[in-house]
Image (cartoon, rainbow, N blue to C red; front, side, top):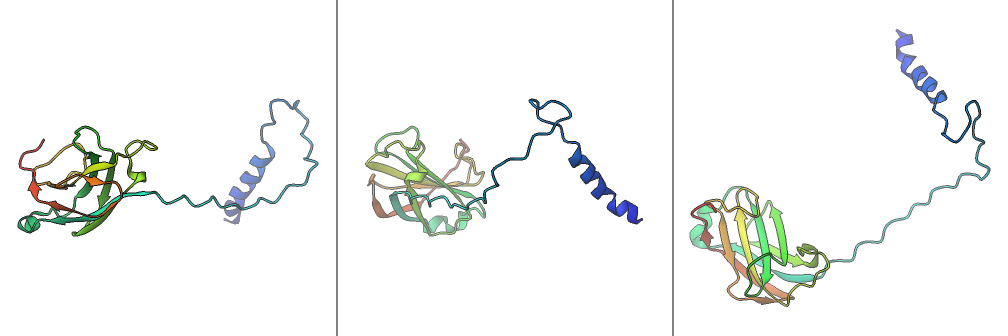
Length: 169
C-alpha cells in the first residue's frame, strides 16, 4: 500500500530526467549551466489607471404610475446620443442589480469608440430591459429620456422611466 502512495513521486522524478533536449544541442550532450547567477525577480506594480473623466451624472427614477410594473430583475441601459441625432450612441453603460432611484455616472470609459471625442451636447435615455439585450425591446421594459439635451459635464440630470414598451420590437 505504501508503494502505491509514493509511486506518483517516482513517476514525476523519472519524467523530469527525460526531457527533450533543445533542437540545436547534439544528442547526448547537455547545455552548460548559465554562468551568470540568477537574479531575484523584482516586484513592480503597474501605475493605477487614471480615473475616467466624467461626462454626465444624475439620477434615474421610476414614474409613480409605473412603480408596480418594475420587473423583478432586469438590466439598466443608460445611453447618451449626440443632440438631435439618432443612430449609434456616443456613450453607453450597462448595469445590473439596480434599485431605484439609481444614481448614475457616464464617463469617458463608457464611450462606444474609445478615444473618440464625446459630443458637447447629449440626449440621455435609459431602458430597464428584461432580457438584457441592448438591441431588442421586450413588452414590459421601462424607458425614459431627458427632456432636453444636456451639456457635457452636467450633473444632477434626472431621468424618469415613464414609458412601458407595449409591443416587442
